[in-house]
Amino acid sequence: MILLLFGPPGCGKGTQAPMLSERLGLPAISTGELLRQAAKQDAAAGRAIDELLAQGNLASDEVVNALLEARLAEADCKDGFLIDGYPRTVEQASHLLDLLDQLQHERPVLIHLDVPEQVVVERLSARWNCPDCGAIYNVLTKPPMLAGHCDADAKALVQRKDDTVETARKRLAAYRALTDPVLAYFESSEAGAVVHVNGNQAPEEVFADIKQRLEREVFAFVRKQRRA
Ligand code: AMP
View (cartoon, rainbow, N blue to C red):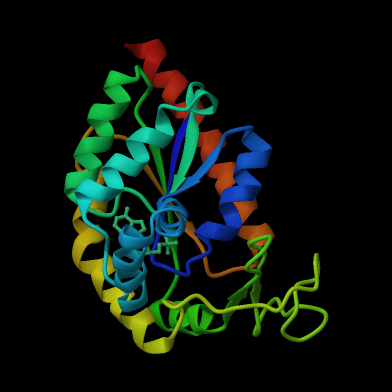
């Protein structure tokens, strides 16, 4: 199964991805994470990517497509995968469909997490994470046991450069401008199935809704295949 987790920054994709990945046994791939890793590995490219992320701008289609293509070629992706944060442009969507054809994968199911803008801005600027193990905390809804320190390894928590109110609004505007057409592209074509889930609830409730909707999608898919 190919799953695309979709929704504005801060909608909970990063929380749902590992839960879904574990339940479905699929590798979870985040293009934001691929970019952050690439930034760590190459000093010159790293500075450029770091600056881009700090300003809340999107990376170029060329860079993201190449990073994703390399990741999908890895062995653990052969039976399916879950992608969080991609495609964010129509260019990327069309590149992904070509890649799926080449790799002989089925069409993707796109899960859109719907969350009101104000909620997303509050969530983004309250987010802190552990620089070592990557655990994500939220000072409003999921604070660490000891303020400012990771529950798992006690390391001092840090805030991503792109998690400020101003940057959050910019990221949301970029998201809407570029990604609404991507959603429309999937909704109005045979490119894949689109499932909307209310992301403005507790993570366990969001997860339960996604599971229920996926089961329905799989049944609908099987029925369609039988009729064909
Ligand atoms: P995320 O971790 O998904 O919130 O992504 C963090 C940042 O990485 C985004 O604000 C973008 O600047 C960049 N990014 C992640 N995925 C993509 C993508 N598919 N296309 C372009 N830029 C991306």
